[in-house]
Amino acid sequence: MKNNIIVTGGAGFIGSNLVHQLNLMGIYDIYIIDSNNNEFKTKNLNKLKFKDFVDKDFFINNLNQFQDSKFCFHQGACSDTTNQDKQYLMTNNFEYSKQLLQFCNQNQIDMIYASSASVYGNNTIFIEHKRYEEPINYYAKSKLNFDNYVRSNLSDLDISVTGLRYFNVYGPGEFHKNHMSSVVLKFYNQMLKDNTIKIFKGSKKFIRDFIYIDDVIDLNIFFYQNKVNGIFNIGTSNPRSFSDIATIFKTINSDVKIKEIDFPEKLKGQYQEFTKSDNSLIKKIIPDLSFLSLEDGVEIYIKYLRKYYNNES
Image (cartoon, rainbow, N blue to C red; front, top):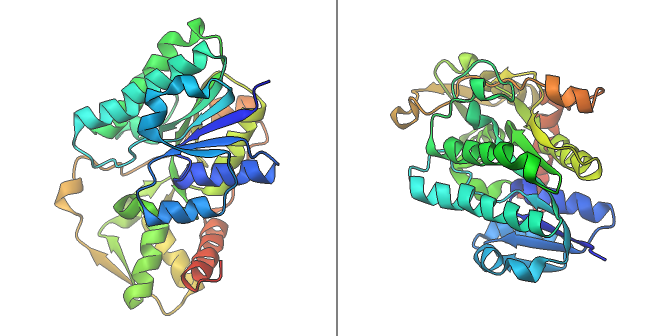
């Protein structure tokens, strides 16, 4: 009987939170697939119970050793949207995913995989349909390529495959992401440094769909327990501005200062100024869908960060 679960990217942000939730459900037969090359990833692993940690390169080159698995959460990828190495992104995000899907199908291993809201580019409509998908960087193109591969082959697959298009996820476990970490973590670190939060000029117009990590994990678990084929947006459908987040910080800490800075030249033309998840499709599956508010999510995260930096967690 197959009992093992594969979690690629299991030492990363969403992956480690997912393994933690599986542990809370009494599930420990987990293969964590990742590259353990970061001290913060090591800290993410410390709180987890799992069967084995496997280097991602060894894993993809020795898939036959993992045929005893019953499910795969494919959360691993290069998540740096500013990466300009097209070949690396295509190999790491597309070819790797394609090979993993073929393996899962051959061995009756159902899969959930991480897609991204970046596939919509600068579109203003975020519906899971090709007409609204206009990626503006290589990262987004690599994600859309795999979405389209799944779409093209879904009718020929013998397993359940669910793609989750994450919007702007924030919460504990993202320290290793550096410049790709959430704006909430960036603001907190800026506040620690000199009690000043820096926002881009015009930030009131930068509207994003921010979703707390716990909501993302809950939806992963739902689709794990209720296997559904398809690609679904994973966002709150209640977008807010970066300026709103800065204001929430100031509400929690009235002494914090907010400073406007120029928009970086390197981000021009590669930056989504607006995202809003259209949840029409996922609500057909989960009619009572609900999410944590941005105010509550930021407050919970700030409490966590205070404990973390004070070595209380």
